Structures are given as C-alpha cells and as structure tokens.
Image (cartoon, rainbow, N blue to C red; front, side):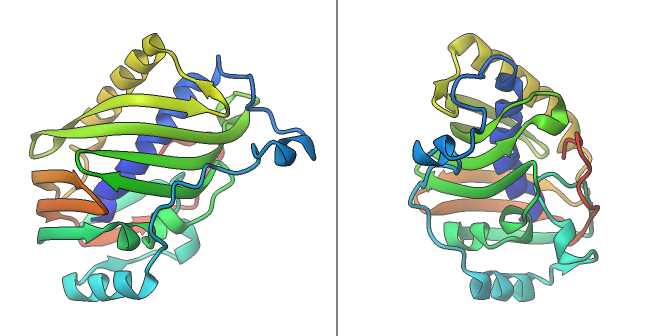
Length: 227
C-alpha cells in the first residue's frame, strides 16, 4: 500500500514544483504577515485524523516490514521496495494518513492531508521549493483523479492546483500532467511487487485490488532530491 499511496500525495508535490517558477504571488513566507493571512500552513481539508493503531493492525495483518529508521520515511525520500502481498480491500483515509511516509516530516514537504471522494481526491501540504531552485514556499493544494491503464500504469488528471493563493492556469496544468505522466511511467515500473488490477478513489479512502510490495527501505531525504 505504501508504495502506491505515497505516489498519490507526491503528485501534488510535483505539480507544485512545476508551477513554482511562475507562482510567486502569495507563496513567499514573510514573518508575522504570512501567519496573519493564514499562509504559513496548508489548508485544513477536514480529512480523517491519522489512526496509528489501525495502521499497525494493517501492517501486522499483511506482514509489512520497514527496514530503515522511522525518520527516513518522508515524501522527500527515495524508497526501496521488495517482496509482494495480495490486497483486495478498502483502505480508510485514517489509515492512509497514519503511514510513515505521509505522516513523516521533511523540510521540503510536510503537514500533508489527503481527502478522498468518490472518483477524486484533494491533497494539501506545505511545500518549500527552495532546494529545487525556486525561492518560494507556502501551502499547496491539488484536486485530481486517477485512472488505471495497466498493471504498472496510471493516468492522473489534474482538476485544479493552487500554490499559495495562486490558481495554476490550464496550460501549466497540462504541462504538469505531462511531467507526471513521464515520472509515473518510469517510477511505477521500478516498484517490485506492484500489480494494479483496480484502484478506485472512494468516499473516505481507496479501494485497491492487486499486489503491492511488503518490504520498504528508505534513505534520509536530500536537498533538491525528487522522490
């Protein structure tokens, strides 16, 4: 589950980076003022609270193993996947929010929330694009859909992306979707043990049928490193 679900959130991060070069308005942190205007933290989506006990039970049920220190698992880290287990069930939003990768902290991306609806999802986070060469930081939010194209292939459709108070225009969304397609085409193929039969965004979580890796290693994040 981790290998695929972290990609759902990484989508918003990559879109934010694609837009950062032109989205300066409202995305530069100014002491006191940013906090006063509510721009020092991501939008609260009203997502379910993380359920660590539920995730621990899920981990035990499916024999998931983590081979690196907890601090290594963040959305800015490079992960290693191995092994495989079959999964055919609905994973609640609260369990997804409790995974090490999504709840983990890195200076580049943190305070992540994911809200799932029937057929779509919204993700928000705080993004600091400085390590990637853009002197901007602030809240990012993205609305998107996912369609399965094959055992290791998905298509992401971006409905809307905001960086700070700036809505990203359609032409940039198209470029971001193209960039995501290229990223996913190589990233998913490299995940050992992944086989997607069904992946459906539902109200309050994700339904997945197929196989996923059951052993996860992770390196500490490095500045300017894409996951």
